Image (cartoon, rainbow, N blue to C red; front, side, top):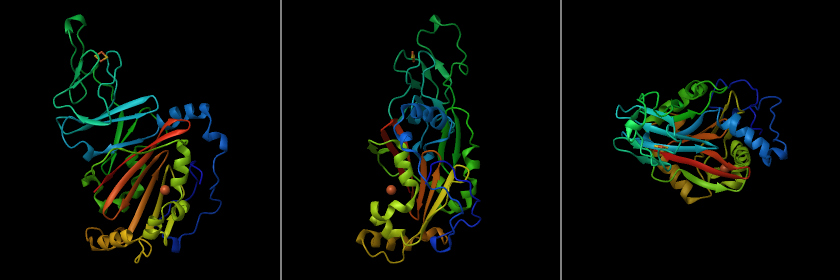
Length: 323
Ligand code: FES
Ligand SMILES: [Fe+2]
């Protein structure tokens, strides 16, 4: 399937399992030309046009449980800092000191109790991003705390998932773009989930980011690449084309997985969960979000993952699991 959005009508009925799915006519599932996976020029263009100007899934609200908790998110030459303030509000900023441009915080996550202190010359910022103080303030003219505060980044939250956008772009707010999935995901209570321990990095691979995304976008690879998932939902599984920058795939959990004992046990445990209505209690749901992210729901948990390009032929897969 191409990563470029196919034009197809929205499916009125989200639970379109394989048994009643009709692929749209003229669905372009061809791949991109080979050169697009090795071109430095295209890679530079992608950094600007895709990753800087489209919504990036940065984290989940539960990754910022208390005031001062932050998540660092780097992509291309951009770096962001998502921070919970003392007023409990989550805000996103460029992770860039207003003095000489140093990173204000290090790493992929952390907590600053009272203020953020730039490690370079010690300017401090309040947890709402405003400038608190500059070291040796008399060596500067008066600095307005808002004007000299951290530069905000556009942010939108959809069912607990925090999206940021470094520059204005063609997509509507994420909560509008994904609104057609609201009814589908609401029973899962995504916003109330909590992160399962672990690092944000899932894997590093020496391939172009589109190679990973192309494979992941179509379920056709599942039987060979993920036999246990095939055992779990492979009998009744369908991919929807990209429509307006998002796609849906749904698998109905097999009643009797045969191949793997672990899948059989998982299936039994999931059958006992009573918090979800049918058919969510029986389904694996995958929402692909252009250009590089996925939110997937199991009856007992949710996961997000995404490709962070680190070079033309190197990609970091970043993600986390929530319950
Ligand atoms: S660069 Fe941050 S205080 Fe100078
Ligand atoms: Fe896969």
